[in-house]
Amino acid sequence: MFSARIAENFTSPTHGGELADPHIVLENKDPVCGDQIRISIAVDDGSITQVRFRAWGCATSLATANILCVWMEGKQLTDCVAATPEELAEQFGTLTPEQRHCHEIAVNLVAQLQPESVA
Amino acid sequence: MSNLSGYFDYNATTPLSDAVKAAMVDAMEQFENPSAAYAAPDGVKTLMAQARADVAALIGADPEQIVFTSGATESNNWVLRSILECQDRSGAFVTSAIEHDATLASGKMICDQQGRDLRIVSPDSEGIVPASAIEQACQGDVSLVSLMLTNNETGAIQPVREVSGIARQTNAFFHVDAVQAAGKLSVDVSSLCCDSLSLSAHKFHGPKGVGALYIKNPDALTPMIVGGGQEAGLRAGTENIVGIAGMGAAAAEARARLADRTVHVHALRTALLSELHTRNLSFQVNGPSDQAQTALCTLNLSFPGIRAESLVARLGLVDGIKVSLGSACSTNKHSRHSHVLQAMGLDEARLVGSMRISFGRYTTRGDITRLAAALEDGLGVFQRLAAAE
Image 1 (tube, rainbow over the protein chains, first blue to last red):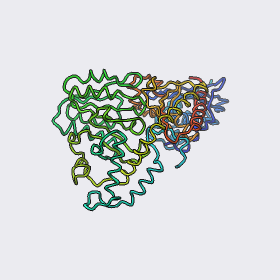
Image 2 (cartoon, rainbow over the protein chains, first blue to last red; image 1 turned 45 degrees about the vertical axis):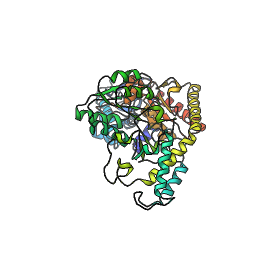
Image 3 (tube, rainbow over the protein chains, first blue to last red; image 1 turned 120 degrees about the vertical axis):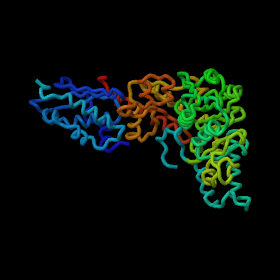
Image 4 (cartoon, one colour; image 1 turned 30 degrees about the horizontal axis):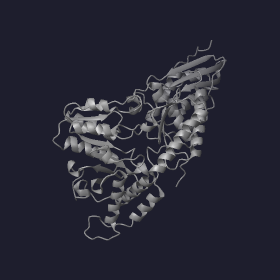
């Protein structure tokens, strides 16, 4: 039902929470299932230094939110902006058809990032 | 018996009891064909007769009124097909919105194919289908009325006895799906006044793949399978001897333990509700407020602000606890909520926050504390993760 990667990130999320003073906030809500993810991001000189998430949703949704945070942290903002849906899919591993909407939520979140997101 | 300490899904299925296993192992030595002419006092015919008598006794029927099937899904399908497809009856099919798909899906398919009038009656907000609503749906020509005795998701006991009178007044055939009641509640076909009643062995510690159909008047149904004349010509095919032996043993055991079981599950239910209150957990019970109208082994709960799918997954992955999900994960295009809870009119938050906990013979008081602690822990985790919402 859950891959080891999804299970681990769901049961032991490392990036849950919210930054007190984020530079960027990304939010997405799936219109059908209602899953909601909010990601707060701190950026220093074009580099993403810290990422945290809040989420309400299914197990896979929570797991992918954590994976997304881990993936973003330490990257250049421009690299995240340039990431393709396929690159994000690789982070999540194999998802069942019922879980694939979580990939779409992640793609929608990353699509909100702009190079000029941080002044 | 394997470790069952985290198992809270007895409405889905139950483990074989030791007595059932022993009966099935013994039956494996019975290789002869029950249709063969030779007879032995301890042979396969005796085994089948005993099993049939034990199943009949569980529901207050005569052995001649019991036909072994592969389970309640087959039994339900058989009744629907026999009454609606094979007989000269053109009236409506009346059933409820909370039936198992073995009734609802097959009924919809048959009625769609025939252009037959299908009347689906909704339950009230506590999951009970009012007899008055069935009566209203039974106006005019009605061929078949089918109602479950106990709902699998909420435990709501349906007014089957009252509905039997309504069906009789309309000259409709009256079928009862008793799969969640047999072996759990006292079931008496004479008292229920039904024409047929279905049950599955694996719901009361018998094997999977075997069940039965009670038929008040066996001439009332056309055969399910035609062939060698087994099961009084109603369901041909060499019998599943091992399964039938297991079902018979399970029925005898369930009947003997019924009073103890009732006390046991009542205590477990009371204990869990008490523990949840003590831990100040916020929840709602989906189902009848009156315990007298509830199969007490079933407790359907909604936790506000929580997606139960996550909670159920966490219980399984972190705590090794197995409960059933009311609403499964959604795909991109379709939300998949419980049709039972939807029919009761529950709002979206309550639907997605729902789970079914069902107790049984091997559930202990310690299991209840373990479940309550795991729920408290999981709810805390998800509330913190969603704190900004």
